[in-house]
Length: 216
Image (cartoon, rainbow, N blue to C red; front, side, top):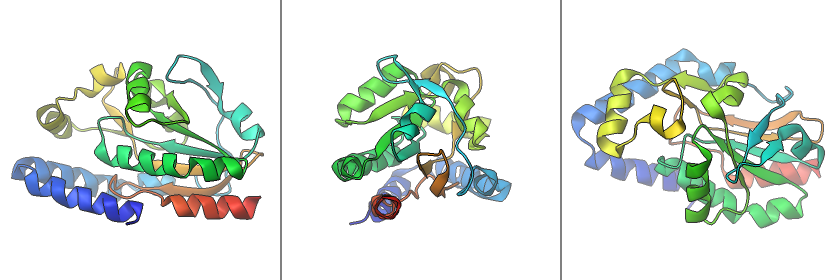
Protein backbone atom coordinates (compact mmCIF):
# COMPACT_ATOMS: atom_id res chain seq x y z
CA UNK A 1 0.00 0.00 0.00
CA UNK A 2 1.35 3.43 -0.94
CA UNK A 3 1.57 6.26 1.57
CA UNK A 4 -1.37 8.09 0.02
CA UNK A 5 -3.49 4.95 -0.06
CA UNK A 6 -2.80 4.51 3.66
CA UNK A 7 -3.65 8.17 4.25
CA UNK A 8 -6.95 7.86 2.41
CA UNK A 9 -7.85 4.73 4.39
CA UNK A 10 -7.10 6.61 7.61
CA UNK A 11 -9.20 9.54 6.45
CA UNK A 12 -12.16 7.32 5.56
CA UNK A 13 -12.05 5.66 8.98
CA UNK A 14 -11.72 8.99 10.78
CA UNK A 15 -14.59 10.66 8.96
CA UNK A 16 -16.86 7.67 9.60
CA UNK A 17 -16.42 8.11 13.36
CA UNK A 18 -16.56 11.90 13.41
CA UNK A 19 -19.64 13.87 14.54
CA UNK A 20 -21.41 15.47 11.54
CA UNK A 21 -20.87 19.03 12.78
CA UNK A 22 -17.12 18.51 13.23
CA UNK A 23 -16.89 16.84 9.83
CA UNK A 24 -18.63 19.79 8.18
CA UNK A 25 -16.25 22.26 9.84
CA UNK A 26 -13.17 20.30 8.73
CA UNK A 27 -14.42 20.01 5.17
CA UNK A 28 -15.31 23.71 5.07
CA UNK A 29 -11.80 24.55 6.27
CA UNK A 30 -10.28 22.46 3.48
CA UNK A 31 -12.44 24.15 0.85
CA UNK A 32 -11.38 27.57 2.13
CA UNK A 33 -7.70 26.60 2.00
CA UNK A 34 -8.07 25.36 -1.57
CA UNK A 35 -9.86 28.56 -2.55
CA UNK A 36 -7.14 30.73 -0.98
CA UNK A 37 -4.54 29.45 -3.45
CA UNK A 38 -2.00 29.28 -0.63
CA UNK A 39 -0.27 26.19 -2.04
CA UNK A 40 0.21 27.84 -5.43
CA UNK A 41 1.65 30.99 -3.84
CA UNK A 42 4.20 29.13 -1.70
CA UNK A 43 7.86 28.52 -2.57
CA UNK A 44 8.10 26.43 -5.73
CA UNK A 45 10.59 24.37 -7.75
CA UNK A 46 13.44 26.48 -9.10
CA UNK A 47 13.42 28.94 -6.23
CA UNK A 48 16.02 29.11 -3.46
CA UNK A 49 15.07 27.92 -0.01
CA UNK A 50 15.29 30.68 2.63
CA UNK A 51 17.96 30.40 5.29
CA UNK A 52 17.09 29.69 8.92
CA UNK A 53 18.54 28.42 12.17
CA UNK A 54 16.11 26.21 14.10
CA UNK A 55 16.34 24.19 17.33
CA UNK A 56 16.13 20.41 17.20
CA UNK A 57 14.33 18.19 19.71
CA UNK A 58 17.26 18.56 22.12
CA UNK A 59 17.46 22.35 21.84
CA UNK A 60 20.53 22.38 19.61
CA UNK A 61 20.50 24.97 16.81
CA UNK A 62 20.81 23.71 13.24
CA UNK A 63 21.34 25.83 10.13
CA UNK A 64 19.32 24.92 7.05
CA UNK A 65 22.08 26.39 4.88
CA UNK A 66 24.75 24.29 6.59
CA UNK A 67 22.67 21.16 6.07
CA UNK A 68 22.10 21.55 2.33
CA UNK A 69 25.73 22.61 1.83
CA UNK A 70 26.65 19.04 2.83
CA UNK A 71 24.44 17.45 0.18
CA UNK A 72 20.80 17.21 -0.92
CA UNK A 73 18.33 18.03 1.82
CA UNK A 74 14.74 16.84 2.19
CA UNK A 75 12.62 19.22 4.27
CA UNK A 76 9.24 18.01 5.48
CA UNK A 77 6.84 20.53 7.01
CA UNK A 78 4.18 18.87 9.15
CA UNK A 79 1.39 20.15 11.39
CA UNK A 80 2.35 18.46 14.66
CA UNK A 81 2.63 15.20 16.56
CA UNK A 82 -1.14 15.33 17.21
CA UNK A 83 -1.82 14.85 13.46
CA UNK A 84 -2.20 11.14 12.53
CA UNK A 85 -1.63 11.92 8.84
CA UNK A 86 1.68 13.58 9.69
CA UNK A 87 2.70 10.59 11.78
CA UNK A 88 2.02 8.22 8.89
CA UNK A 89 4.12 10.41 6.59
CA UNK A 90 6.99 10.62 9.07
CA UNK A 91 7.00 6.83 9.48
CA UNK A 92 7.15 6.44 5.70
CA UNK A 93 10.04 8.89 5.52
CA UNK A 94 11.87 7.04 8.28
CA UNK A 95 11.47 3.84 6.25
CA UNK A 96 13.43 5.30 3.32
CA UNK A 97 16.05 7.05 5.46
CA UNK A 98 18.80 4.46 4.78
CA UNK A 99 18.26 4.88 1.04
CA UNK A 100 18.29 8.67 1.38
CA UNK A 101 21.55 8.54 3.28
CA UNK A 102 23.07 6.16 0.74
CA UNK A 103 22.35 8.83 -1.87
CA UNK A 104 24.17 11.41 0.24
CA UNK A 105 21.00 13.18 1.37
CA UNK A 106 19.71 14.30 4.75
CA UNK A 107 16.14 14.63 6.00
CA UNK A 108 14.68 17.09 8.49
CA UNK A 109 11.08 17.51 9.64
CA UNK A 110 9.79 20.89 10.79
CA UNK A 111 6.68 21.83 12.79
CA UNK A 112 5.60 24.73 15.01
CA UNK A 113 5.32 22.59 18.14
CA UNK A 114 7.66 22.99 21.08
CA UNK A 115 10.88 20.91 21.27
CA UNK A 116 9.50 18.76 24.12
CA UNK A 117 6.69 17.58 21.84
CA UNK A 118 9.19 17.03 19.02
CA UNK A 119 11.29 14.88 21.32
CA UNK A 120 8.25 12.83 22.36
CA UNK A 121 7.38 12.30 18.70
CA UNK A 122 10.95 11.39 17.79
CA UNK A 123 11.02 8.75 20.52
CA UNK A 124 7.49 7.45 19.86
CA UNK A 125 8.10 6.93 16.13
CA UNK A 126 11.80 6.01 16.53
CA UNK A 127 12.78 8.75 14.09
CA UNK A 128 16.48 8.83 13.28
CA UNK A 129 16.40 12.20 11.51
CA UNK A 130 16.27 15.69 12.97
CA UNK A 131 12.91 17.10 14.07
CA UNK A 132 13.05 20.89 14.26
CA UNK A 133 10.88 23.54 15.91
CA UNK A 134 9.67 26.55 13.92
CA UNK A 135 8.53 28.97 16.62
CA UNK A 136 5.50 31.04 15.63
CA UNK A 137 5.77 29.42 12.17
CA UNK A 138 8.37 32.03 11.26
CA UNK A 139 10.27 29.84 8.81
CA UNK A 140 7.17 28.29 7.24
CA UNK A 141 5.81 31.82 6.84
CA UNK A 142 8.89 32.83 4.84
CA UNK A 143 8.02 30.01 2.41
CA UNK A 144 4.37 31.08 2.19
CA UNK A 145 2.98 27.98 3.92
CA UNK A 146 1.13 29.43 6.92
CA UNK A 147 -2.60 29.90 7.45
CA UNK A 148 -4.72 31.04 10.39
CA UNK A 149 -6.86 28.34 11.99
CA UNK A 150 -10.38 29.74 12.28
CA UNK A 151 -12.24 29.68 15.64
CA UNK A 152 -14.62 26.90 14.58
CA UNK A 153 -11.72 24.65 13.62
CA UNK A 154 -9.90 25.49 16.84
CA UNK A 155 -13.01 24.37 18.72
CA UNK A 156 -13.04 21.05 16.83
CA UNK A 157 -9.39 20.47 17.74
CA UNK A 158 -10.12 21.21 21.38
CA UNK A 159 -13.17 18.94 21.40
CA UNK A 160 -11.87 15.95 19.43
CA UNK A 161 -8.15 16.08 20.16
CA UNK A 162 -8.03 17.99 23.46
CA UNK A 163 -5.64 20.26 21.58
CA UNK A 164 -5.13 23.96 22.28
CA UNK A 165 -2.83 25.06 19.47
CA UNK A 166 -1.52 28.14 21.26
CA UNK A 167 -0.59 26.17 24.37
CA UNK A 168 0.78 23.19 22.46
CA UNK A 169 2.98 25.34 20.24
CA UNK A 170 3.76 28.04 22.78
CA UNK A 171 2.50 30.54 20.22
CA UNK A 172 0.57 33.80 20.26
CA UNK A 173 -1.44 32.93 17.14
CA UNK A 174 -3.45 29.83 16.22
CA UNK A 175 -1.67 29.08 12.95
CA UNK A 176 -0.41 26.01 11.11
CA UNK A 177 1.67 25.28 8.03
CA UNK A 178 0.08 23.42 5.16
CA UNK A 179 1.96 20.13 4.71
CA UNK A 180 4.87 20.49 2.30
CA UNK A 181 7.93 18.52 1.29
CA UNK A 182 10.89 20.12 -0.45
CA UNK A 183 14.00 18.53 -1.91
CA UNK A 184 16.86 21.02 -2.07
CA UNK A 185 20.24 20.68 -3.79
CA UNK A 186 23.65 21.83 -2.54
CA UNK A 187 22.99 25.33 -3.87
CA UNK A 188 19.77 25.64 -1.90
CA UNK A 189 17.65 25.39 -5.03
CA UNK A 190 14.35 23.53 -4.77
CA UNK A 191 14.42 20.60 -7.20
CA UNK A 192 11.19 18.93 -6.07
CA UNK A 193 8.22 20.27 -4.15
CA UNK A 194 4.91 18.93 -2.92
CA UNK A 195 2.75 21.63 -1.35
CA UNK A 196 -0.75 20.51 -0.49
CA UNK A 197 -3.68 22.38 1.04
CA UNK A 198 -5.30 18.99 1.70
CA UNK A 199 -3.52 17.54 4.73
CA UNK A 200 -4.62 14.01 3.76
CA UNK A 201 -2.32 14.05 0.71
CA UNK A 202 1.49 13.89 0.92
CA UNK A 203 4.51 13.30 -1.30
CA UNK A 204 5.20 9.64 -1.94
CA UNK A 205 8.61 8.55 -0.59
CA UNK A 206 9.47 6.95 -3.94
CA UNK A 207 9.21 10.37 -5.60
CA UNK A 208 11.86 11.69 -3.22
CA UNK A 209 14.20 8.80 -4.00
CA UNK A 210 13.72 9.15 -7.75
CA UNK A 211 14.71 12.81 -7.84
CA UNK A 212 17.69 12.17 -5.56
CA UNK A 213 18.95 9.39 -7.82
CA UNK A 214 18.74 11.78 -10.76
CA UNK A 215 20.44 14.54 -8.80
CA UNK A 216 23.29 12.22 -7.88
